[in-house]
Amino acid sequence: MPGDSSCALKRRRQAWGRIGYCTTGPAAGRRPRVANVQQIDPNARRDAMRHRFLKAAAVLAVAIALSGLALGQPAGVRWRVDTAVYYIGNGWLPEALEHLQQAVRMAPDDAEAYLLMGMIFDVSGDAERALAAYGHALALAPDAAPLDVLMGDIYFAAGRLDEARRAYEQALARFPDAGTAYYGLARVQAAGGSDAAVDTLRTAVEHAPDLIDARLLLGRILRLSGRPEEALEHLLHAQRLDRNRTDVRLELALVYEALERMAEAEHEYRMVLRLDPDNEEAGAGLRRLMEVQQANT
Image (cartoon, rainbow, N blue to C red; front, side, top):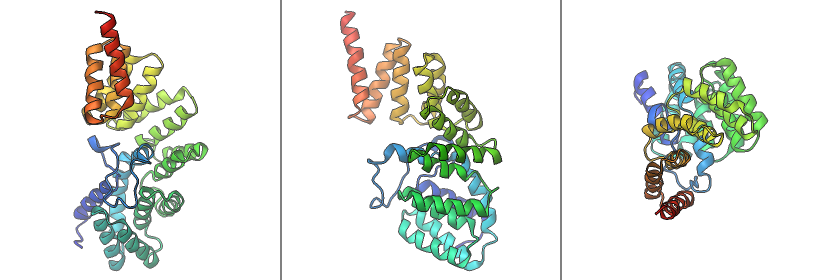
């Protein structure tokens, strides 16, 4: 494997994107792309998986920080880790895991190998092994990146809200600018019915302006609290980042409907149905608009 650090960083970003850990920009918040479909049931865990892969700021920081650590790896360990990164990039997760397990046998203090193992366990649905691997990476490189966010997302998906809250708060204690940590904390607050979620989400999008799901959740909470005009700003921003996100378009349709901008609401409902013909909520919304139009004619 080539030893140039910029090439290694590029390979790591490409590989992490392959298993769903998007970096920044429009890709942040998208569903994971996993070639090894035998290990993944995307329909069964679609929503939970999307949240687990909102790692934009955290993973970019990991890529930058741990690529430096990779330069200090013994040659044999570095070959194992680079090979695993290549395999991950091709969707060969079991083969990648074998190399990473060998790497940590050779170098038990290799934080990057544990991080990558955690990502593979995470995307494969093995929460406990993912937590253990992330915990090792965090203990070895506590200041590399807000790895607690990765653990917090697993706790949140499992409904372990107190543990999720602690993980996000620990991340923010070391990385006060981590937008993904604020987003995770806001989800915990919203799940508990706390009004603090709105302010936390505002802080999240301040630090991570292109974090789509933070914009979406903020827009939804604002709409439900009777502030559709404020919601519209965040949803339009999210739509500009990814015009094919049906959940964003659906929420946008509901906001337009609340604002009585019916033509725009109809357009968004139809766009959702074009992207997802079986979307029941969009179908119901469109029928509701048609009934109103008929009643007014």
